[in-house]
Amino acid sequence: MKYRAMLKQVDGWWIGWLIDLPGVNAQEKSKEACLQSLQIGAQDMLSIPVTFEENTLMAIIEIPEAA
Image (tube, rainbow, N blue to C red; front, side, top):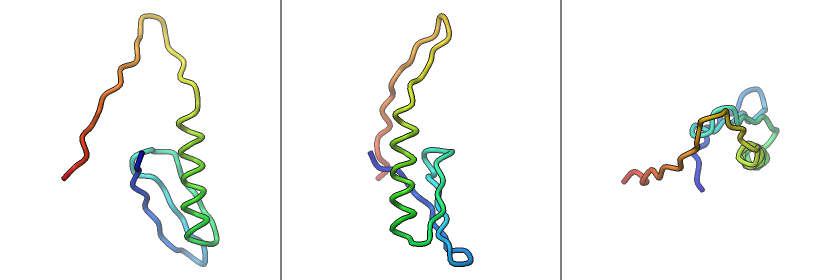
């Protein structure tokens, strides 16, 4: 899977977040470390089990990539 990341450098720190996975954020001293932290955060978020309420179901939808 591919996710879009926003990165910016502020006061010697790289700050990043994933546009497509709200809640995945990182702050590191190097750009590479920030990207790695975002990747780990995305993996962690996607591995969390989803609990369901009674009478609900999960559907998987496919979104084609933009041209």
